[in-house]
Length: 167
Image (tube, rainbow, N blue to C red; front, side, top):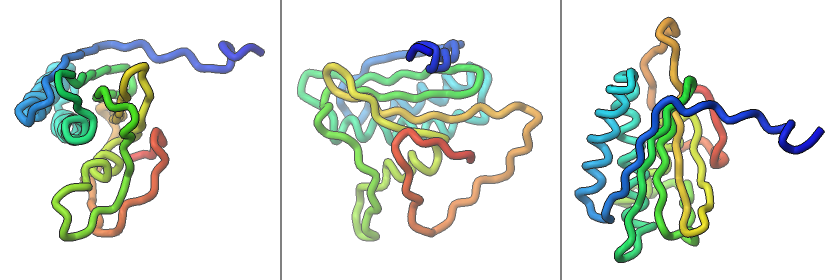
């Protein structure tokens, strides 16, 4: 058996959107609004708020930790039959995101915790220049009963980047 036979074929992309943004705070708001609109237009209005929050956190991290003067960051949305993937690429490949627990008095440091708890999977992919941080939301079938999401005050679960867990 060859390596190509062992890997499953990638799922076909049904919809895709990609846009580059200047590294400014205004761009984060633009990403958030675009995400909510696209996901709703693509037939998944129930995921619009989650997608907007995820892209907001990922774009903010790209702005704060991955931007370089004169270089844009890229936001991509991909929809397959089973998942919505949100990917944000920036030019700083040496600055990898780290999931950590922020202290109570810290103003920053909770973005990846939000991503890890909200997304069904997330991770980091290297690029020739920079990196891509992504989050995925599983699509639910209309007949699947989904209860309200409960947030607990307990510390975040440890998750390996790219690992998936059911919501």
